[in-house]
Length: 298
Image 1 (cartoon, rainbow, N blue to C red):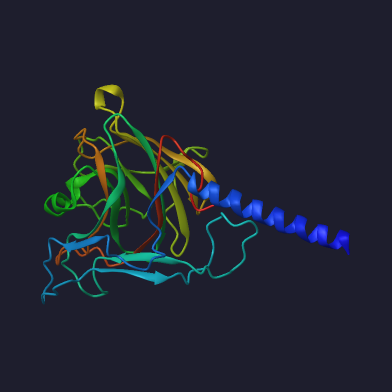
Image 2 (cartoon, one colour; image 1 turned 90 degrees about the vertical axis):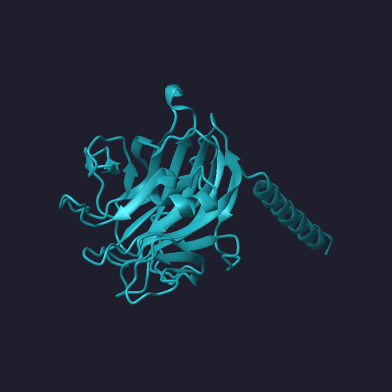
């Protein structure tokens, strides 16, 4: 009896220590949560349709809402994963309902939990899932306030990630590969596909209904100090492990100011040349000071 009681006490103590260790680990995590949508509210976000040219006019055309995950787990992050449904909430963003066109800037904006000062490097982590093509989405970090983002639109971006298969004005068609902003004198080629450096080629177009993990390491130093740039790591699809897919992508505007907001922008296209309303899902948006390539959800 004594030995049984001693064994039970030992198990209780071990379990208590494990819980305590987990609690301390979570409290000391270097990752700051921007949003994982498990609170199931968007009260801390601002949505705006700032170039709403819908005909007939729709007052609030964008779809930006929290949903329960019913997509199959297929992000190469689950050991020996099978077709199981993940009980998780995420954000879905579409510029408008299917068939509605003319909403040119559907914005969703949230203030960061802490600013990224000039001279600092931070790592941002975001999971995304392409609901469907055709679409035109961009998301990233800004040094403008939410009110300024609404006034500025795409030029509010600094580090920018883009998902689209739309035609450019010169007839070039994007293929749905994840893209980054680059410095270019060609007004039609302001973005580049991320790369599969191992195979010496562009990465493949993003698969639909697959969660991708993205780490973007943002250097907010001044341009003359090698900053205003970001590196991108990707896991998902063809990349079964975390992989560097772009080095030294360019800030869009290079304002050399503190970064203070995360925002996403989607666009149906014009009435003459609509892009489509395919949605993009977001989840687990985090930030961490310095270069941090760990997974904040573990």
